[in-house]
Image (tube, rainbow, N blue to C red):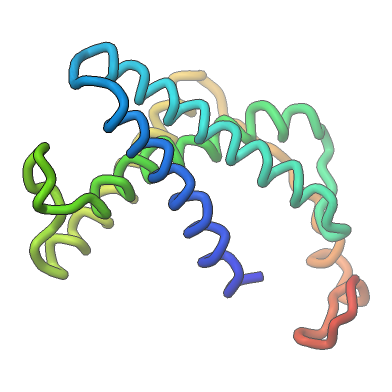
Length: 161
């Protein structure tokens, strides 16, 4: 699944770009559009995280002690990644010739710096939320394929564990 990750993350972010571009071109600039865009990003982030959590739960190697907690709170935490990455991916992909001004990085160094800053922002947001809730959040993930080596599939055999 490692190599497939690239494709489905590109798919998520491409869909988010289409929606964000539609919002930007349909509505005139102002605080209402900004608030609407923020709401759309939050909705897309939670929906994407929830759907990914839901689909991976069908994989036999993943079982959860408290499924509803994983679907609700786990998806909200995972959605933080998308709250940051959807707008950044949109920002990186916009044309420098747009009427909103240049926002795309000019060099590889700038792109790397912005990517690393995005990762750090996600890390900080996750930690602020965890500390803000005042508790250590532990969601136990029972992974029989990791706990019992006999259930692990050999790679590229086509067999399912």
